[in-house]
Length: 276
Image 1 (cartoon, helix red, strand yellow):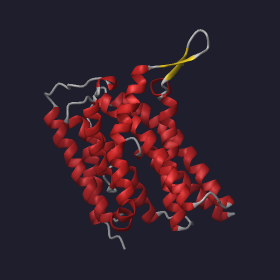
Image 2 (tube, rainbow, N blue to C red):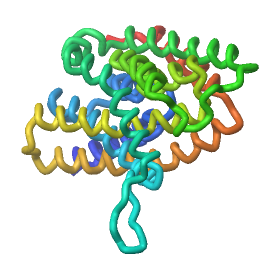
Image 3 (tube, rainbow, N blue to C red):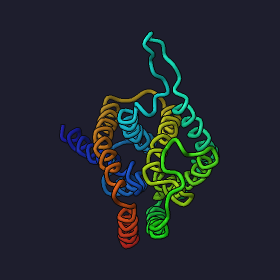
Image 4 (cartoon, helix red, strand yellow):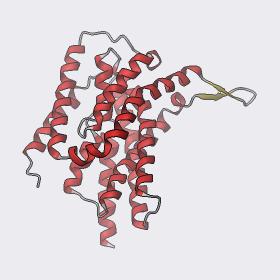
């Protein structure tokens, strides 16, 4: 009984960490791997690998709920027949284009990266490097007027370039949202449009990764494993709703530099911590 209670609180904490870090540009994977150094689930390595991806899926479902009106490409006419919303459909075409580079790199190098780069040193270096990048880019952008202000104004070329930046997030500590937002800011996309496009991109990416991990692990879970998955996904989903609402309010009046400083401080602490 005590074991179940202990695992519940571990999963609760991991779900909260995932819900916060998935959408803030501070690297959810990096945080989850660091937390795992101190708070390890009583589960096999294969299950934990899948769990970390599946709770990200819980976070993604929060985006689908909050942005359903913007994401769903169909509406119903007065005669109760569905019709396609061209503007939304074109956004999804751009999202697919942006996801191609990341999909190719993940398929080719995911196992290699997991085996060699999921270390505190790599995570710390990525946290610090991209933290500094956020501060430098935001300072550079201070007097610059964005050339792309709305999500709908993102071109196919811009979407592909943002997708190239997403490739960087295969290294833990980088942050998928952080990499795409940095790329978007560099090429003149507004903070709001960059964040919204990142939300769109996360949906097919995380559904795809979740499917791959589940097929790799298998569909048969023990009762405790199923409990861990459902609890983690539910907590990540609930926390993500609050964090996404906060982020969209925050970036209307503030830049991303505070997240850059947070990354740098955390990265330094990780380097100083005596990991075994």
